[in-house]
Length: 597
Ligand code: ASP
Image (cartoon, rainbow, N blue to C red; front, side, top):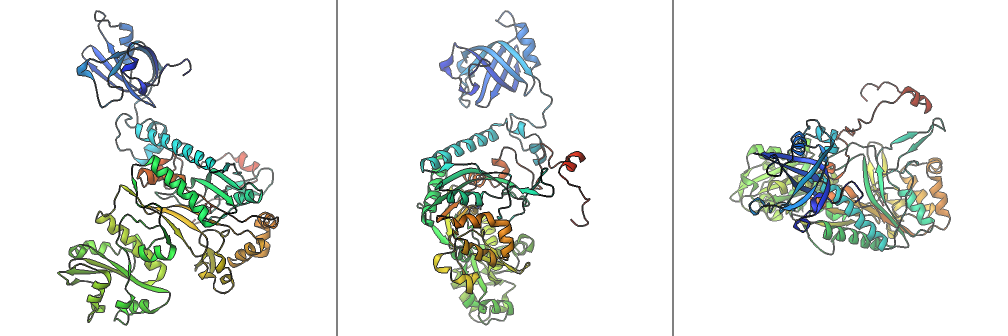
């Protein structure tokens, strides 16, 4: 314990009665009661009561009293005294230290504290701006202190798990060159090499592959990944991944490691129940078609079904086209009891601002059509067919959408989640993990008119699909595996391309010229020539995992020093302007922002 103190405050129990203790911490609350003053003192382990008596006759000490009445909230103090049993009627069973109190002989004020921007001892709501600006004060609250500690324990548990499975921890550089993961790079200008820049790693992807070529065989690290993209509730510009890579493996081996990670973490750190063991697998195609998402929330049903047969040849030109065209779909699902919802509720379903454009609804009442924008398309026995296809009850609402495959499925997926929430179908006590497999290798970027990797360009296609790279690249499926839980993507991984010829071919398909490939990725292409082993790995996000385990949807709840949604560090006030001399050292000049940028 050192010489400053003898015990942690939260550890004091009746077994310590009679012992001399020295405690350090903060004043949590003070309460005057006649000639008694009760001060709750807190450190990271908990609080304990210190009892100070005023009157000299009853054993009080005027010097002590004078100090005690000076105490304000969050003063930093040291208390020296004796542990005593509280009188029976003063015991507090809700407090771990509630059987005892400390009778002080000395109270030292180590540092005082001005009025606080928010209370520490009461967990009141704090605005995001105030919370982030005074994060160190928020951290004194037991709620955040507990999460920070839990994060440490999770990291420790995972580190031991990985080491136990034969992985070795290796740090890779932060100052490096771009490893594309689909976001913008953060760049660091070089002072020594004018006009040159390091890129901060979006992930250690290339390094971990180089480690496999180096014969390391099994690597892991808790890697900081820096991506210059807009923050969202569940995403920040920097995040941490449990990055791992292994040699001479199949996709199955990667899944096995992920199962150990997620199974172990859930068992130890969550009171929620795993929905299914072993963790189920689902193809990307199935996830998109049944749930409208490649990270489906499997805690509730509301599955999408095919409605093309219902609308084939119907009078709505767009639905008839969607029912016939190979790259379009018509799908939907029934919402139990939604047939009686008001017009306002129904219109809210199709608000394009929430990414649910193209959605239509059919409201039923006692089995008949109550209202629907699709009324004219539901002629003849189409309404019956629609009811049968969706297994709709007599007073249900049926959601229908038709159009280009991915856009339509994603719209339906968003409405599905909104319905699950509205109808309170989501079982909050469950962790519904799944592995999503058989992802396509590419998607078409219509804005840039080129193929783009769905994950990244180092992913190995399925062996039997390699010939399709030449003929039908959009049909190529890969060895990618994503772990998802409760609607969050927790992790992506895959086997990797390990021959230079195939890697060059994939680079070519996404529009990287031979010259650029050599300039930007020459190191990897060269390394792959030196007997590179077949390898693969994944990178479970640590922040998201903790979010799911704790049941929060805000990443800022699980990070010690988070940034705002707009990417600012309010505590340190960053990003900040720098001295002109620093810019000159870096050979940089700042131009005023261009119009519209
Ligand atoms: N580097 C990948 C990512 O950050 C993970 C992987 O493929 O291992 O998503």
